[in-house]
Image (cartoon, rainbow, N blue to C red; front, side):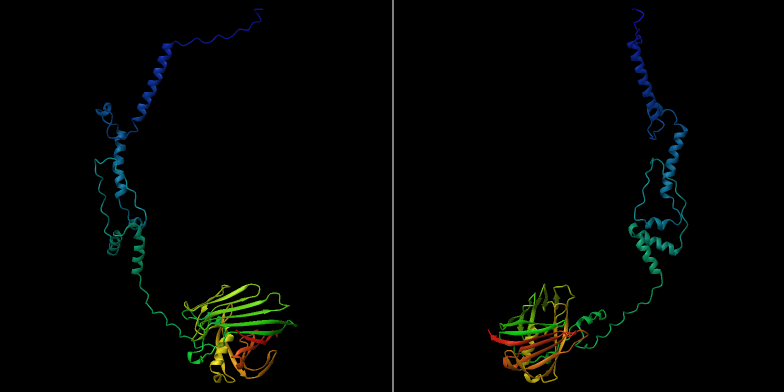
Length: 407
């Protein structure tokens, strides 16, 4: 049984306590001595420990201190030829070099060579300018030294063009040279006759037309409300075959020039509006079309009927056959000069009865433009009793007076 028993290794003998303490103290002293000896060569302070004050400093340390004291001021004070302007053009200030010891002043560098008179003047001027502005000053100085180009006066503005053809759209004036203001051509005050606007009235029309070879019919109601200083006009077109009734409204003021619209709107599927702003001298469109100048006498496509009626009623003898009437007229996108010509005084057979009339006609101003004809009845205060619009493709819209009612 004793032979089968395994022998356990015996533990090493324990170190005596006094030996362990002595070993720890020795290791600590060695560490302290190494730290102290390692810190002495790296110290550049002038004040050394008392143990080294009596002995002369090592040659290596003295030479290191001497080179630091002599070299640092030389870097800051030694001028380099050709670098004066570069240092001034830098927007940042040069870094200052701190002296290791204020004991000995730095050696004086040799005086630089005197610059040329032109360079000396330039350096003196640049020295008074802050570094951040030196580059701009140098550029100005170089420009001043260059020969200056002769100063020429701007060319005179081109003369204003003559009055344009009234049939030319106002949009064509957008290509006028800069400096010229596009303006509408309105009839001079001497061409505006005495006005006599019709009283409030309701006009019912029978409307017939042809579109793309198809004939159709509808009804139209035109109302004019005269409040002596303000007005409102409405034109509503509706019918069985018209899916979206069309409503045009014009509101504004009445004054010495006659009808002065403030807002015109035209709505079929969606509404578009034109705003007249005489206080600003502008006409503004709701569909972001370019603004155009406003002027007295401008009309919209609905107020135009009653402005012409007032002109005819105010001085009928002035509008003989062949007379032309020019009126600036605004739609929902632009303003054009509409020129009407008096074509005669026919008597019309209308659904509401016969009426003696004065006929006005506006010819197409350009390709695919409309021909507009209006007949005014003197016996009804010169209200429009018939209006016919012929499109450039041959489509026709004709509305004839069926009844009239004062209100």
